Image (cartoon, rainbow, N blue to C red; front, side):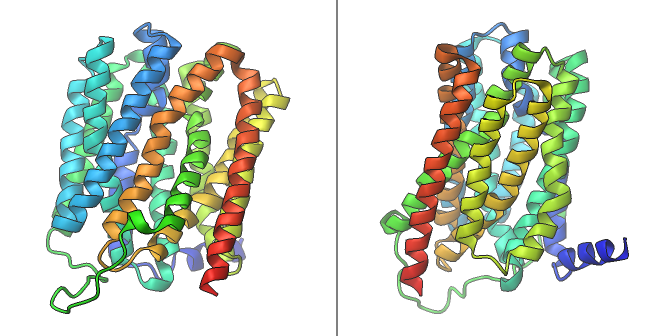
Length: 401
């Protein structure tokens, strides 16, 4: 037990107070993550939307996330991450309050697009904050701390959301709005006079850096990230529908399953990043995580029982641990001093694009061939993505060496 405690101390040691405060802000914000995990169930069971209509609404959220990520990354390079994060958190919270009153298909699709634009502006700005306040040798661990906070909050959010959804879906929107605004206020009052550790000296003339749109190796990386994320986001789109329709799970049980993902990442990511992050090349960890992502779908395909749901959730949680923190570290290393916003924005766009296409592809595929065959297709696709990561990142590594 003492060795385990020391392992946790070492894994969390050396991180700045600002990094911990950013994690606290994210924890408050993500503890209210209740709307998105239950959105597909809310649309189908409460509002009576079809699978295809549900896919379009979820995709509108993804499209808004793309626009918000672009806008957030661009504005962060122009006016700084502080203003963007404050506006995104407080503005997004206000919009969640209003969203609960929109019930019709077309207005809801448009409104959820607007909510997504505002809330997702925070993502690239927040990632740049993490990199700015971290020591160079602690960048991956700082991102993992942030992700740990995200997943701890996400463990509470869906679990509590399942209880609230059983009473009233409107309460989910209120809870999400309250936590967004609370996180925004904490962030504003702590960071309003705080100076980042890593700030470019604007008084020194430096050569212009290559545009992210001309970094073709990185663009290929983003396409592969989209492929990975399209599969991972099925956890929040088609998987809850599968849990309800095939196994008749209640909202509380669905919330527990989704919360299991957060708890696994919370307890294991920082330790694994600390133990293996400096010992195993980043590209191998990303490839391994992508293979696990595919394996989760093969698990659903082969095990047609409730135990398969839990096993698949465990596998996809470790896929997230091995891939995502190192994907963002690769993005930081690929960017320059003055275009981190553009690189982080495009990285966020990769995930946002996946969130747009994932429900659209997933629900339409399920509607045509059923859940069982869809899991097989997704697993095979995931293996191709892993192969793509392997050859792409290995080629980049060989060029650098």
